[in-house]
Length: 276
Image 1 (cartoon, one colour):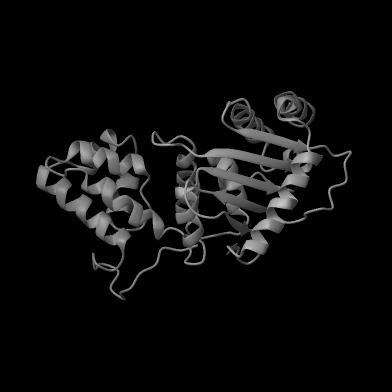
Image 2 (image 1 turned 180 degrees about the horizontal axis):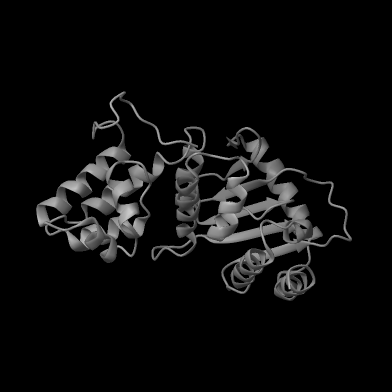
């Protein structure tokens, strides 16, 4: 996952949306006579991050764009409007169509046998997972992954989540025990949120039905689509037969899993057994 550029000149502000965003921040900051430290204070980040965003070397979180619109007079929401284009280019080309669909979804159904999916990962868990591939732009990858989660808490029609996991995904240690406790606490909070559903397939049930992660997206208008995670890349399916097969598999996983009202207790038990 890399930030795309379309120019050989790394200093060219038109080289990419990221470069353009950073250059606009720098122009407005210098016009006001603000230091990078001053802007960082307003955006609740450090001098170094401001410098990297201005040079087009880091993807800004949405909160940074919101701070720019708050600090810079007459921006009229320009930086928040630019931000979706910037974050889009933080994803690889093959993943962008899925992210755009995910942002429009009203219901997100996911299954994962071994890991918690990105849409529910804490920052530390995401960083630990992504670090295993030894990327050169780890911070950008983490930012992009965490920003996807906004669909679950947005003010306008937040998406509902229905997550089915093998119990092995909760027992699979990613990082230190403290990291896993925080991640399971977050998962439990989602499980206890009325509009969401989290179900666990107990270890005593051998789940050979599906061995790879996949998900279904539903919308207010239009047919469902399927996303299949894989290596080296995932893919989106929209053919009715493929979607119907995925829906049937998901229904069987739901039937195999423990009821949603047992999830919080199970998460607590696993946290105590494995990560205390």
